[in-house]
Image 1 (cartoon, one colour):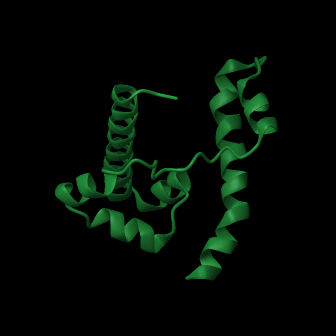
Image 2 (image 1 turned 90 degrees about the vertical axis):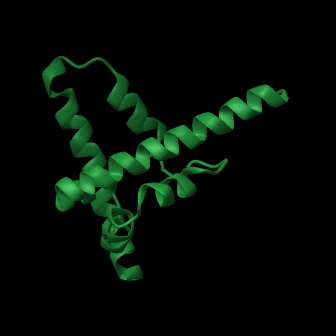
Length: 115
């Protein structure tokens, strides 16, 4: 079991990560909404909400002991594929984007039907 200072450090690290993610997400949304949707995997309404939050609201939202962002890699096979050595290292980022966007495309119809 972790001691209290380690738990406090972990919670602070989670808060910091949450705020960094929210600030990045907001910046991406303001810069190019469609690219942000692709990169973040968020719905239109959620992006609109995040775009309009003030910094104090972002800080409040980030201040939790739970991560608010979600890992989009959802299987060990994808992790193995993305981390193995590539014969063409320059194309690795392209392969990663294709795999993540393919997964995003599979989740979009479900997310859109919730609207």
